[in-house]
Amino acid sequence: MVMPAYNAALTLQKTVEEIPENLVDEILLVDDGSSDNTVEIARSLGITVIEHERTLGYGGNQKTCYRYALEHGYDMIIMLHPDYQYDSRMVDVLIKPIRLGLCDFMMGNRIRTRSEALRGGMPFYKYISNRLLTLIENIVLGQNLGEMHSGLRAYSRRLLEIVPFERNSDDFVFDSQMIAQSVYFGFRLGDVPVEVRYMKEASSIDFGRSLKYGLCTLWTLARYALACMGIRGRLFEGGGGSR
Image 1 (spheres, rainbow, N blue to C red):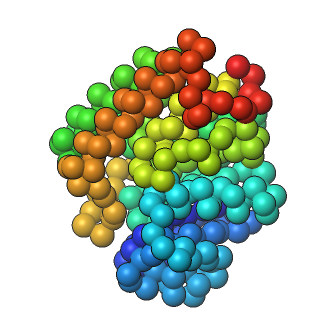
Image 2 (image 1 turned 90 degrees about the vertical axis):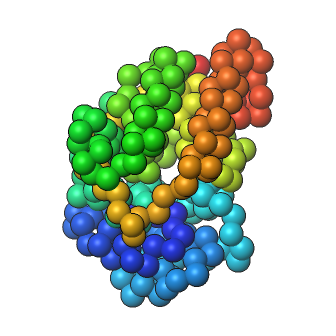
């Protein structure tokens, strides 16, 4: 399991305590220049820690996570935000379709109903933008997923070996690029329902960053459509998938 972390001191222990026992061989936390004691807490919990010398960004953090996972022979990689926004009790359910060979990429879906999402504290503008972006992504990518903007994910090793994630953004749009690349290279995606948890301790990007993320996601979809027409940019070059 890998955790891209930035100032997660208030939520890290609660997140780790809910991970089902004996499910993962190792937990790696990559700290992206936190100003709190995230690193000290992680080490006290027996978690493997990598500290970035400078802040690389959310996408840059994940690149370090996945490089480590591949170098250390992980056969399945779970990515969980350590901010307690995602229900880590569901990790064993999340990975089962990958173990059974039914999917290559699984996500936690926080949005089963509008009332449940809003009752869980999701800001209304984020709910609306999530629904709209997910609808557009499903149409363009030919998927039928409940949510495309989850910070609880699991990948097969083969997917990370094929998808050129090192070419992706170091910012938040990294997640959208991973989805588009995975579809392009022929991998199968799925999701499972998870509890909605929005709280003041959990990390969250503001309206300006959310707007930038949404626009970059739409640009990623445009690049995917061009790649499907044979005009491949660097996000969709290489790979050895079944496409």
